[in-house]
Image 1 (cartoon, rainbow, N blue to C red):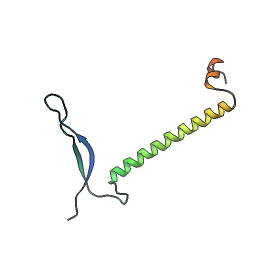
Image 2: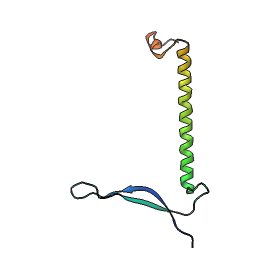
Image 3: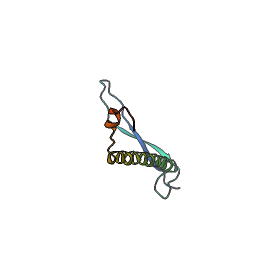
Image 4: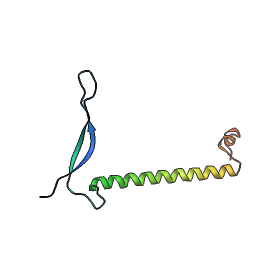
Length: 88
């Protein structure tokens, strides 16, 4: 029989009658298998999706920074554009 695999998915803590927390207790789920990466299939899918999102956002911000740098080089800053009535 294969050893069971557990993945920690969070923590929880009960409260005392006075409102303070008891010690936190980790929450686990049982995983069927792990991939070669050491992650459960659902963890790997979630991580890849999140990574893709972060890369897209980073690319957008880099493009914005490059555009702002180009405008600055041309002598047109956001403030000058606002002062001149937004005409570029």
